[in-house]
Image 1 (tube, one colour):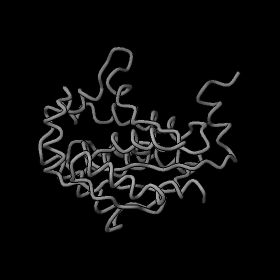
Image 2 (cartoon, rainbow, N blue to C red):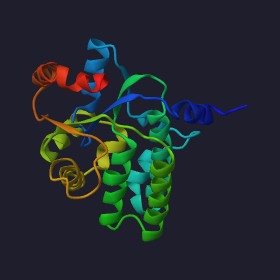
Image 3 (cartoon, rainbow, N blue to C red):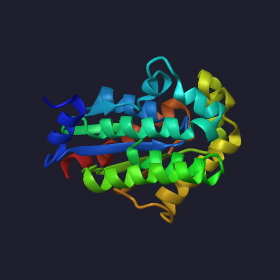
Image 4 (cartoon, rainbow, N blue to C red):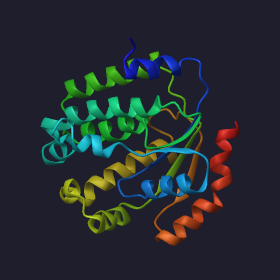
Length: 226
């Protein structure tokens, strides 16, 4: 009998799914974006599996990583790769997902390594896993929506939402993540792009952002008709 994961993998082979990835820095407004489209379209929304990263059989690898990234970075990022792969293999024909397997590697693993907080051997192992997954499993993405937000705005939003794990995140960390996103999605000078990119400025207040999503609604949902 196939396991749940193996079943998803089998169904994924040969199936044409539409996948729209919402990307951006921590506190850039990704959850607000996916919630808007969940309420105002027929698209299935899959939120970033943060709750799984906070509780793996009673352990909180997300909090441990922020406290001691050199020790726990590979632990969290291995699990992030697994959970994001599971998200990509969801069965809906049209879906919008918060972040992606690609940003997990190109942004967060890369940042840990470049900052000296991930040993080379850990980075090599995660890279081997990522390369194997993307070579042997079809991970289609039809559109990336990049919520372009300044690190300063993200830092203010972090303080306002008061997640326990995020209390230790400094502005410098958000600046590093921002630079990696810019290199990947705007300058396109670092890692390969799996799909076209739609950039939405996201420094604005909630009402302005909801208006932005409505203005870009047809462009975003057009990916499902490709």
